[in-house]
Length: 198
Ligand SMILES: [Fe+2]
Ligand SMILES: [Fe+2]
Image (cartoon, rainbow, N blue to C red; front, side, top):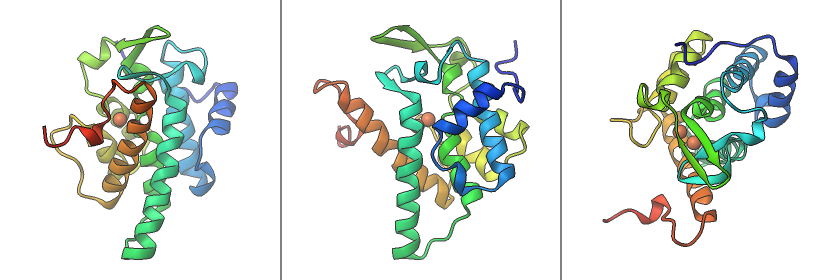
C-alpha cells in the first residue's frame, strides 16, 4: 500500500497549513507551493482530522507536532542568522527553510494516537525510518537534493548526518525544541542534553 498520496486539491487544508507554518514568506513561490503540498499530502494521508491532533512523538505525547515544527523553524532561522553574522556562513533560504519546515513532514504517518496520554508507532514506521518517508515525498515533489538528503538523514537514529551547514543548523534547532517538549512531560523524563556521558 502506498504510504501517502500527493494532495494538491484540498483548498481548506492548504489554507490551514498556510496559516500554521512559520517561514513561508521567506521562500520563493515555487518552494512555498511545494512545502504546502507536502504537508497537505501527509495530513490527508494520515488518521488526523485536524493539524492540532497530530502528535509530536511517543516520548512527548502531549506536545503537538504543529508546535514543534514552528519551534524548529524559528530556532533554526535564528541560529543560521547568528552564524552568518558572527562566522560568515552563507545559506539559501530556499534550501534552509524547506529543511526546517519539512524535516518532520512524515510524522503524521509514523505515529498513532492511542489516547490523550499515549502515542505509539504506526505499521509504516516498522517498514521505513522516520525521515526516509518524508524524503521520498519531497523527491517526488521536486525539492532540491540537499533538502531530500538532509530530511532523509536528520533523525537521531540515522547512521550519519549530512555535512552541509543546513543539516548542522537543523540538528541543534531540532534538539533544542525536542528537549523543550520532553521537559514539559515532567521531571521524570530525561531530555537529550542530560543523556551525555552515560
Ligand atoms: Fe525528526
Ligand atoms: Fe523534529
